[in-house]
Length: 124
Image 1 (cartoon, helix red, strand yellow):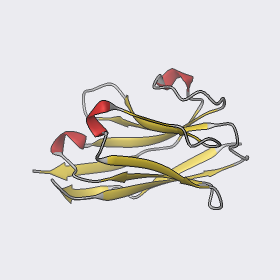
Image 2: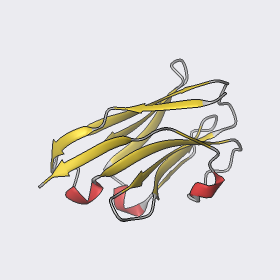
Image 3: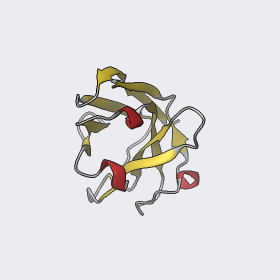
Image 4: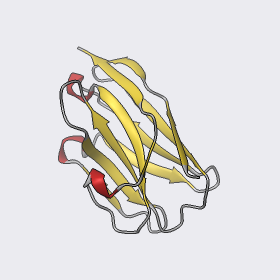
């Protein structure tokens, strides 16, 4: 059974940085796409970034390009989201998700497995 466990959220001032981790277990993730999504209060969950576990192919939401970096550690079965130059509008619960096919997409309905989320709060 696939499990995704996020960690690394917290409170940070605007301009600061956080690194989120997603520990994946339950199978090998070769051929999967791993994604990060976020949901702010009163808003729909939205795509942030994703990568193909095998090829490393990446995709980012425009608002985070140049500030956020998604990466993976194959040995640790862990996906990271390095977030720099954080803004108050980045405040949200951040979710890790896994899609069991290789095409990198932004549509959250295509992701089968989800973590419980980790809160990120950016103060102004």
